[in-house]
Image (cartoon, rainbow, N blue to C red):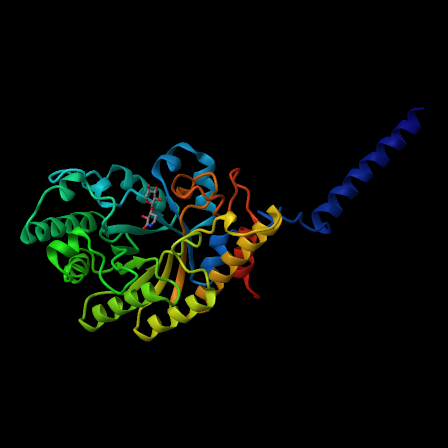
Length: 357
Ligand code: XIL
């Protein structure tokens, strides 16, 4: 018995020595686990120097960790949906409130996300003190100058692009009759652009409207941009809102044509507020989702293909939160569903950004 157990002991020891010798020399290293089976939209976009993003709301960034994490994972540019509008930042003549917008900018900085500001001059989202102030031309110019200097100065160096004037034209070719236009005159646009450039020389300046296709409204907008350029106003780009459920033209070929003529003026185009409600399409729910995906794909493609478009921002990113729910009642216009799962539109954009390596 003793001899047998001694032999068994020797055999076990030999096996252990052999195992140690072979694992330390011959065995291949264990491969690291793949981090994630797919890449995000933002990582694909970054490889092509492209910006893909959405509008955000600060209270959701603060209170909904999934909202925050999905946004940071997928996007490299954002627009505050409401919190850089005039009445949010400047609620009283002598009082500014940057708290909510600052929180958005801080989130963006932490995640290396670019920020676009929206909108310094607009006829909506004005505080009562502006609308009801009965100001003279000189007073309103002074108010606008102070607003731009203070807001753009506050974020100097931190804003990738400023929407300086939002929705300046009418469909019939005329200027929109806003308080700015009526009180200051058409030069309010030149002044606003110049004051923005002075307050932050390194940010891109754009005007923004639903003027994407080829029609009388987009002609007005084009003429305005051309005049501003010719007059030497500091205008770098135009924004196409791209709300494809209403107001905006959804013919992507026309939009591609329109982008081209801005390139000839030396202007970039950014898609700034894209959304595509599902009830725009007929058919089964699956067919509607596919039609929506095709539209997101087509618009991303025309921007990728254009020489002067490198930014596509959606008006939100998850169907859980869209302004259209309260505004037109139309449904599910974005690329993540209400549970933050990617929809066919997400996959279509993913493929388009991936391209053929
Ligand atoms: C909308 C916001 O999404 C809403 O939350 C708000 O109540 C009203 O404004 N064009 C624009 C945006 O330029 O500022 C608008 O945003 C949508 C239409």
